[in-house]
Image (tube, rainbow, N blue to C red; front, top):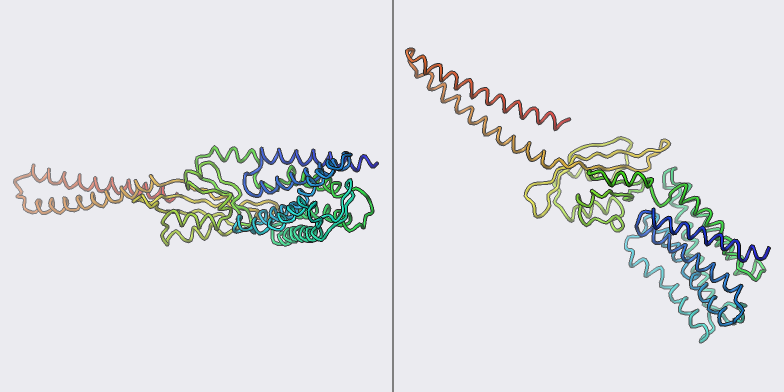
Length: 414
């Protein structure tokens, strides 16, 4: 039974964690959330390996090195889960500053354990894996539990704010963090009087929960993988926004539509709009379309959207379609599609200008012919006939151009 607890269950957890890491790297959406998720599981694997090495090694120096490996993972685990939860719920505005703030204390604690032989403030005593905790250890424990409890609170807050579709994800994530935390607390406070740390056993159940979340609920992706491959092949620009206004996906055509846009940085629709305003000029008549981007509504939307690049004279014109994504009666996001109609709009505008010029010419020709007709004598029938034919021809030219313009306008409206 002891071998199962100390070796078999941790190995199962390692296999599950590594499976999710590989799957996420191959199929997951490449962003900061995915990196944090993978880092959480890497630390989990290192923690378990260190625990197993502590149990099987016999040389004291080797056991101490295994303890250092284990506690390096332990020290950063709380900070990493907090970072993941903040990124997952889109609560980090400045990633670099947030990481410095979150990881500053764990870094100090890590330096403390690495130099413990000089001050004995992390472990007061240590002999063949048996240890007495010092003041710095308890500060580390307080900080880690605060981070982990904060992670669960963040997920529970988001649980009540999100649509029903995603609630199961937040519940599973909260349980997977809370369960090993409780086991670790019981071990550290000696509530469970046993030589082995039971936290890696909790990782087995956490890994199973994550396994279900990743493979069944795809909590790191809104769209199935096969669909994204199809959307990448579509020439129209497509953006998928979830119910929290996070930019969940853009297809390959989007990079042509707005070069330099990176969803991993501008990761919600508000940052996308801010980025767009910085890069192009948008007049006031297009502001209602921008506002509609930010609204998750039941009804679909379509309209024209124009903007002008700094190095261009004529605006880029797009026909925008916003289609809500529904599942079981709940809106879980929306698809924003941009159809490039720039060339068509420019041809229409050019035809309008030419038609106005042609109409003016036809009108002048009609007036001249009428004047000439009034001055003609009754004896010059051939001239009269030619003049009538000229008047008829000018009228037909005007009618043809008008018909062509009306046809273009009708097509534009459809």
